[in-house]
Image (cartoon, rainbow over all chains, first blue to last red; front, top):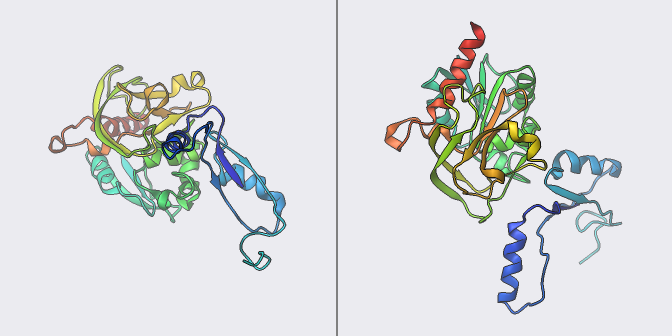
Length: 81
Length: 218
């Protein structure tokens, strides 16, 4: 799940990163926003949205987006590294 | 009048909250894993870092066993005060409107601030006068109050900062629910109950709660 600050909500973390990048010579960067990535294995994927609404995100201040990769980065089916 | 002060793992202002409550009535400590409110007439959710504030401040604590009873108590009209982390827990539990976001400056702020009492028509401020100024400290990193529709909650505002400290919308420092029996604030009235620490102005909150209870019994 990708959890991000809702559009229009002041995101000082994103602003701080946006100010820091030009200082390192990375110019032309705008609209920086910092969110959160939550990874999990789940037996019943149909309830993932409900998990986000009830706990993983606060719908008042955050949007979430669910991605369902075939194999996670962890666990028995994870691709070998 | 018996205050019940909840201790979650990571709560760090329980002792001061108990002391402040004891100056207005009787104070007992409640444990997060215990659903029993032990006969408390009013509940206080204190400041700190419940469950490490993992995920979001207050997000895990709202599902603590004791919170099932606190939510039921509040729905039945019981008086519930949330201070700092307790305010965050009440917002996460949906008992209060809005949410607390990281301070605009992304820094921990610890300072004595001036507050304005917006309304005395609550069980938490009935001993104060509207417009009265209170000197009470704040100490938080995640205290920027936000609500999606600020006009809709204008009647819920109980306390405002008289200056900007953390980027809170409309300088909001504390809000109550529509029924006015649940109140949360970021400043710490329990740290302002003795001249030794600079101010006794926080006592008005606890005395108001105690008198509200006495009035309800009369």
